[in-house]
Image (cartoon, rainbow, N blue to C red; front, side):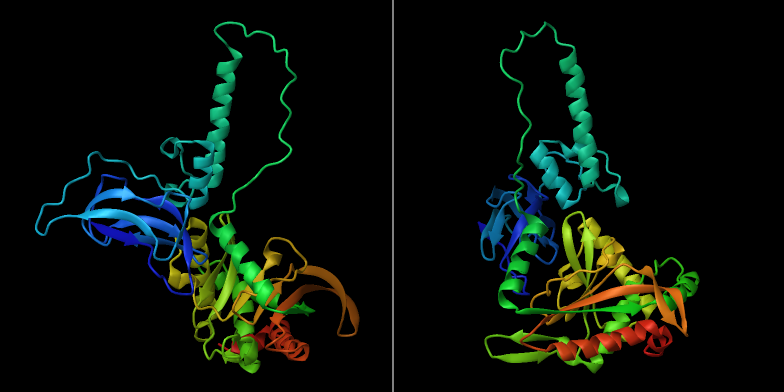
Length: 391
């Protein structure tokens, strides 16, 4: 008998949530075959079977939280050279996002009867909701035509629920834990400024024609400008080692980018962003954002970031103060680009303006240092030709 335990995945991860078992008790599994999906604060990871044999007992149920070293299941290993048995019956694979699986489980909905409209036919949360509403309507029709008239109700009609309790699970639970750690351990301070991005708007419009199938957003420009500014002000590309009382300055530039998904906020990482062009950053960001929304990120997609950018303006906010992505030193939040009257070449004209806000660890840097970093970031966005020279 083999006890399959939740392994140490590194990155300081200590627990995860069981999202989906690919096998059931009594099934046969081959060594290396996908066995179970576990969601950590970084990504959803598919763990392979450690051996070939029959699954005797599953100890970690879907939706449950497991610690590193906790037994997930027990496998009765097949004898060496013994033929691998087939499953008792073929079960069609149901492809669904983790959030859609959880919602279906809460609603008691059979996912095999839901039509997926996501990429490649993946079932989304909206698909589950539509199926649940359709099921309710079918029940309503059946109830509207009873076999015999129902006796008049003497009781008062049931009042609608005034509260709803939502279990904090998955990415939301991981975000909650990480934000709590960040705010309790990092003394946050903030710096806000505005940037005239009129020339950047024009440059992006010109370059979109050369981007091919890559969606050229503003974020890749922000990434490249941030890297150039970080090279001048490296203390913001660092972390604080509390045990040793040291500031750890990173000589590499792995830029995290916050992605809004149905499962919650996920930070994907552009590794060695200083060595990549704006178009390369845009392509990688597009691919990783798609995988984030499908719940298919690997640990390598989300680990080892040194500085994070969150573009709240993509959704609609003018500006906001973000929470530092622990254990980094700073996070840059960019707001929505709006037209505002500004004095330009002696005249008051409408210009494209954007707010930026830097949240930082006051143990590592002071406000003046952050202001100088922000000025360097601004200069590159206000004169994007300088940004191109950094490629």
